[in-house]
Length: 251
Length: 197
Image (cartoon, rainbow over all chains, first blue to last red):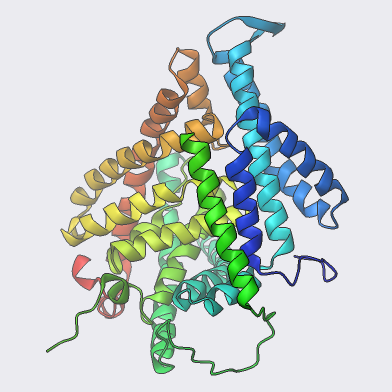
């Protein structure tokens, strides 16, 4: 979640994405460019009010991946052994490849972490709708996020109920696979029926994805006005992103 | 004369939007169910396959893409990069559903196996080039094994996919078939893809 005093909060969220894309397109393809950019991002992240969120994503996902990557690629690449750790022999080419992957992943994760720590999902949704993106897609996204939590609770209840009726997860693989159906059938049945009813309700409100059914109704979401200057900046950033990407790929 | 309706309008409308959202959530929640039962499979495409069958290929592709986007944003960034694989799964299962593979288990099973091969082909370059073959999945030890016997990264990632995906997708297809046979006809009749079930 972005902090309320964040200076980037009132900027157009799509520009955050474009700036991120420019950084990735310009520096994301070569190791000699990736390292300095990553170092700068790490330093900036350390002073960011959202550093906990950014580093949490890094520690949870990237660090184990990088360590395993170094182990797998260092051990199993062909080439000269650069160092040995007991019986484990690490090859130079493998470690270089693992370094490239590691730096690329860190760059991507820290950039994405920055983006989502500064921009709320609701803000992106609202902005995309205001810019003409079909509201059906935004609705699917928001509804599915809401449904995940409800379905998890329901699945847990069904699991407890089925366990009480004799569902045993200590049996062999085939028996356990069979137990998946008593969990999924009631869950799917109730949610398909509920989704069909929800569909009728949407039809009743004439929800087409294009028409604004709210008709200027007030919203708790942050409204971002896009003026003429903003539009020009957005287009320049878009062209720059495409240009740098093509240049980096084909130059 | 009846107005011509595009595929997008036909498959993504007020009736199907909640079903697609349900498919997205099902993809995510089935992962939890698999952990509860301690199954050594992913089964994270059941929602995609189900929606592709009961709504259509485009809806299936959207379900897969949104599921991976949500998983990527909230759980593990790696899922975002595998969105192209979910598009392949949604498109293929939607197309084969139209020729009636979900009407019998013995047609669902081979279709699932073919789907697994296609998924392996689609995911291998992403896994190899983006993550160096390691994605923190339960089948990473297979990549380790194939690297140890001298295969390249892309070959190892493909062979790992080939070893794991056909079984995973065949089981997913069978589960979708059994789900469809157990859901009452009164509910199925209200679905856009009723003819596929």
